[in-house]
Length: 137
Image (cartoon, rainbow, N blue to C red; front, top):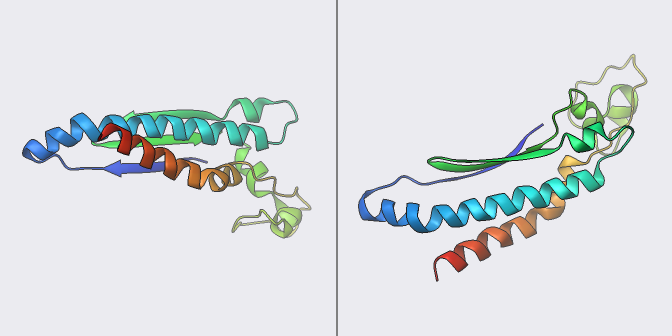
């Protein structure tokens, strides 16, 4: 499961150089802060048995013509925890679209990534707005 936000620009002449010099560093800074904020929330919300799932939640930021941030777990069972499985998963308030096996009792959904993103949406928007405003002063 990966969450990502993308900011894109197409450099054109002096404007392109100005954007690359002024806006891209602001986007990079805001993206780095945003993915860490979401990561910390996801780790706090993540159900813990052994701690392996929580510790697998990492961040990554790439810069090219776009600034891309990723936050997510790297355990093969991460989606089963987030969305649940079987009949219990389908009946969970945090269930996804499925598919869910009707012949398996399963486990209820225990969302941690989606609530981390949803709970920080306004804070992330503010980070971008504030960082770009600061950079362009």
